[in-house]
Image (cartoon, rainbow, N blue to C red; front, side, top):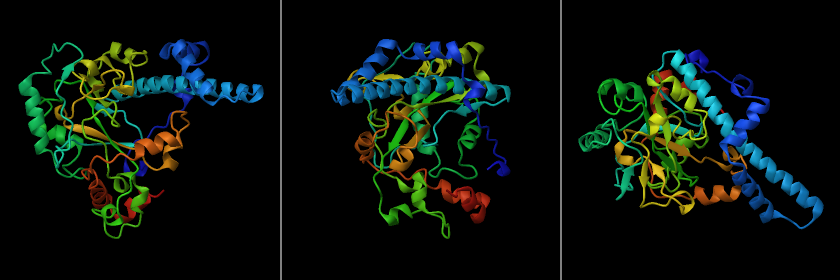
Length: 352
């Protein structure tokens, strides 16, 4: 990939993580002690055997799960701050922070009208910049119909879209940070003929090794259920020093890293189930953005790779059965990629 001109920087904890007392302080700051204790106690009580030796082991495991979760939160914020500061120094503009199981795509209206339209959504914060202006939101909603049908290839990238619309057009000019809605794809297998549809002829790499080709069923577009919170796309060239400092504070998250993200997005939505059904979710309605993030659950083997106590087989089976529609908008990327670099090079780059 580097030979193709892509810059890839690999960072280790030593490059950005605090140490010693500073690390301990940040771990305790990001997650309140009482909440952590309850989290560990719940797991312990659920699995305890009433055997002194076995219960001591279970309690130690519960505490270790809490420590891993704390470290994950701190590592995520510290890493993001390091990256975005570096990108600003390089003179970058729009950047996006997404996981390796997530892919950016054009947010065209669903061909079957399978979208969740909220009946009650209001901005969480004041709107001093006119981002919630009805005419502005309508123009973005209308622009969704003009987005390229296929994603990927010359003239059909996010960068091409920004250039074609012009830097002074909404939403690029008036949103420093965009919280993009996610679309969750489960683990339901499609039929072989469906998987091979739009697959490049003579391409040797098996389609089942590529999640974007293998999995097509997804949650309801625009709904909080399964899709959960969005991910942020930020113009780092317009970020201030205080915004970079905000990145490592408890109120920051991978979903809304800086305060800019909360100017008009996310919205408080009251007619959809919140997190665990306890509170209204903060979410970007599907109709006010030109881009979205496709999030793939993938196979159990890939899902289970990360050292994360929240990732259980039970949860995988529960969320993996989602099937509220199918979407193939992102799939043409592979044919475009093969046309761009050639069949042999594409197979080499996508091997394993």
